[in-house]
Amino acid sequence: MKTTDDLFVLIKSLTKTEKRYFKIYTSKGKDSSTKHNYLKLFDAIEKQKTYNEEEVIATFSDSKFIKHLPSEKNYLYNLILKTLHLYHSASDDNIKAAELLHYSEILYSRGLFNQSEKLIDKYKKVALTHEMPVQLIKSTRHRIALSLQSSKNSKKLERELIQTIHDSKLALEKIQNLQEYRELYVQFLLLIRKEGEYIRNDSGQSKFTPILNHRLMSDESLALTNDAKAIFHYISNTYQYIIGEGLESNYNYYSELTQKEAFDLSEETRRLSNFCEICIKMGKYSDAMILLEKMKSLPAKSFLEKGKQFYRYYDNLLSLYNQTGEFEKAEQLVTTVKTGIKQYETVIHKSKIISLYFHFAYSYFGVKDYKNALQQIHYIVNDPSDLRRDILCHTRMLQLMIYLETNDMLSIEHLVKSSRYFFSTREKLYKYEEALFSFFKRIYLITDEKEKAKLYTRLHLELTAISRPFTEKEINFYTHQINWIESKISNSCFVETLKSNHNLFA
Image (cartoon, rainbow, N blue to C red):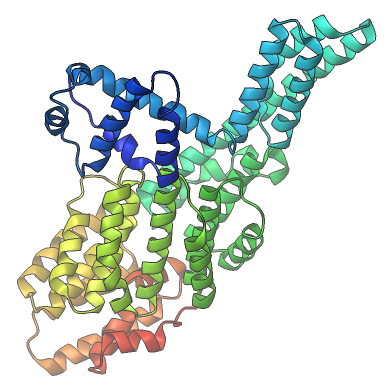
């Protein structure tokens, strides 16, 4: 039988309180001696940094249960899931509703129809309050059976049956409506993951047209649930953001949204993260720092929540530091963030990790640690996934800047050629990028310092003239080529030049 590390990964995902609850739960009952074996197996696996089954077998070589390790591991795995279900049942509305329905069905089967009816009424209230149309559908058969058994007269029976069918039809309509919005959301998210967070051309924009022109995107009132409304606003606002329009309206939207109660912590960190990113783009750095502190203070409980909180916090914090020229602060976080990536790699999407590595590379560039900067760049460009094409474009620009800083002219020549081909496959080369490639193509051929200075000055004039449109300006946002060129012209420190001009496009 093939050895898997599923149990190891599950144990490592548990919080301290979840582990404590598991141990208390498994120590109870008549078969505590048997459960004690599972506790010992749990502890042995929990202590490992990487899963080693041979080590586990050697540890319990004198115990009988180790002869059946695969089945023992399977039992322990399901036992942990059971305790997690019990642990989170008090705080999960879906579990609460499911339990109420189950209890009502138990009472019904015992002929206790009045008691069963009381619980089904509570169940319906929970399902309606927390927008659970699926739960309402699940209860239809039971509610009909209960009405047929408990109704004292025909009028009451007719009223209850009509109401149950009405509730079911409405629930089905909401389910169908939400499903359609989710389909739009998935299509939209796939495009974002592939194309990146800004659209390079009209062709890229046209890919979003079928989604934006869908009948459900014409008016918010067509969204029948809060989840559907959230998707409507996410698509509308995110699209405006990636085409460079509506930053102010996005700021106002998230300013209001973050004041409202989120349905879970993951949703709250997502709102804060999106709002923080908008603040950074707008140069509202003080607002961004306040949002980051709020995000950091949220009490994440589950492994997934912690992973999302970790990525969203550090992705924005690193971006904030790099945008404001605080490269040393960003660079000091690299080891910590890489440790976190390793810890949460199972719940952080690869596109997010690529984003973090770009921040690493740029922070190393800012502190003139070009060797480490290139190592982060190699991680990005050698990644086999076709994700975050926008970051791949910025990475190649940064790589050219590093080669120029290190006077590696041969690498510049090679990278200019390969990068032009790479950018051509992205359907459009921006004027900003064209100007930079033209510059790099010429700079490595010039040895006279005065001629180099003229070339820098000419490039600066050209870039400042064409960097006002959002799509052009967005390129400068990531690696601040204009500030870098200014530092070359004035023979000054790039960091100080950036710090004095980081509100250039605010």
